[in-house]
Image (tube, rainbow, N blue to C red; front, side, top):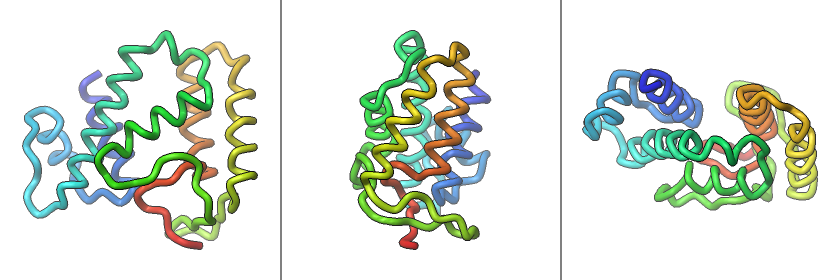
Length: 151
């Protein structure tokens, strides 16, 4: 589980623009030692991912059915101490390296989030629910975040 937590925290942060290497992320998570030459916010981001994952594991029974409030709480944990606003984003974004443009207004985004939550209510497998949320939240860029690029 420790290996999975390290790699998940590192890769999720890397997707958001974090420049830590996997070995640096492992040293940070295991020994709380920040890597030299990186902004402090990168260490915070990785540790936020780890802490959020730990919280979800500790409360796993309450995540068998995920609500919009759960999504917001998880996002709040992920961006803690990073100076990032929480909640549904209110402007369009682009994703660097692609031509894909996610939904571009808060009404469409709120509707997509409600639909996502409702569609997973009948899914019994917790890993399947997690995969659906991970892919759809990433695909739609429903919340604000570190590396949103104006599209």
